[in-house]
Length: 70
Image (cartoon, rainbow, N blue to C red; front, side, top):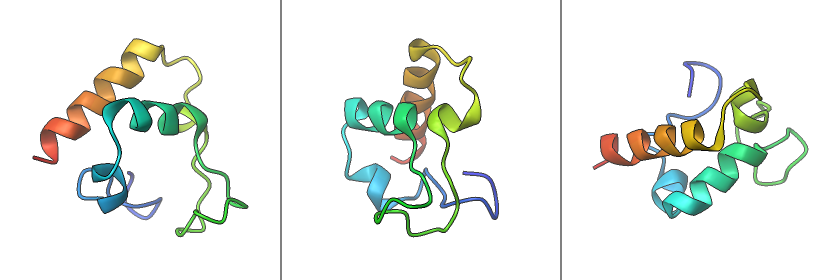
C-alpha cells in the first residue's frame, strides 16, 4: 500500500491469511469504502486503480508480496 493510503500489504495479517489465488481475486475486485470489511476508510479500486494490469501482472505482484512477507 501507499503511505497514508491503506495498510502495508507486505506486513498485513489479512494478506498473510489469504492464499495467493485469494489475494489475486481480492486485488482484481478491490474493496470499496462501503464494504464493512474496509477498516481504513480508503477506497481500494480494482487492480489498484490500474485497469490495464493483466492477470499475469497481478499474479506477479502477489508473488512479490508473498516473497517479501516471508
